[in-house]
Every structure is written in C-alpha cells, then in structure tokens.
Length: 169
Ligand code: AIR
Image (cartoon, rainbow, N blue to C red):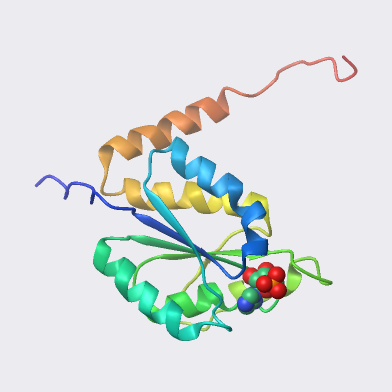
C-alpha cells in the first residue's frame, strides 16, 4: 500500500509566545523552506491567550497540520500546553529571554509529566533549526520525496568535513 499523499496546506505550525521570539526562529523557517515543507507561523502566548491557543490548535489540525513547533522563553509552557491540546507530535524550543539564559525555559519545556511528551530541542536558534530538521524526519516517515531530501541534507552535511587543515591559515 502506498502512503497517503502529503496534504496540500502547511504541514508544520510554528507558534511562539511573543513577537520578540521571532529572530531566534529564523533558521527554523529557512530550514523548513530548504526541505520544501509548507509551514505557517503564529504568535500566541499560552499564558496571555490560552483560549486563542486552544482554538488555533483545533483549526490547524482540521486544516491538516501534522507537526507543532512551540517556542517560548521564560516560564515556557507553550510547548507543554500544545501537547495537552493535541495528539500530534509537539517539538519544543526553549528560548533565552531573560536572566536565566534559557535554562528556565529549558526546564519548563523538557520536564513534562509522563503521557504528555514534548520533543525538546536545544536552547535558542540551534534548537530552532533542529525543530525544522526533526519535523522533516517525522514527516519523511510518510513522504518518500521528503525522505530523499532529508538524506540529501545528511550527505551534504557529511561532505563538509575538512581533513588535515592548516588551523592557522
Ligand atoms: N512568554 C510569553 N508568554 C508566555 C511566555 N513564557 C515568553 C515569550 C518570550 C518572553 O516570554 O515567548 O520569550 C517575553 O515575552 P515579551 O512579549 O514580554 O517580549
């Protein structure tokens, strides 16, 4: 049996808790574009707009979104709240937004209770990039063309090794 064809609308929904988070997410959007994965982005705070978040998750799921990425700083409950609202995979990106350098957000995102999983990335823009790469690997399970692009990226990355360099040149 062949897998279902990819849905036509955005397959990844990226949500962040504030407009101030957007610069850290740039690499996520760039990597999703490079994989040719349709995405949509929204600013919704789990603390400030809980009802908007609930309605958005329901509507996005209805439209065919398959992976949610939640990114927030401080007491970053957005990814965890997403995971309470959907059974789809949720990827969490803790951001550095204050005095604790993102450790606050990391603990908030990673320490989910059993049964409510969030795949937690590194703090900040490296984690945001990896949210795109992990989204690609998840979606590639049912999308052979995307699986080929993931393999192409891996080969390209592996080809970047620099053997026997002159470190002072
Ligand atoms: N935030 C917003 N609502 C709940 C949380 N945890 C986070 C945002 C941002 C930080 O608080 O994700 O990283 C500061 O937001 P703002 O809007 O004050 O700049």
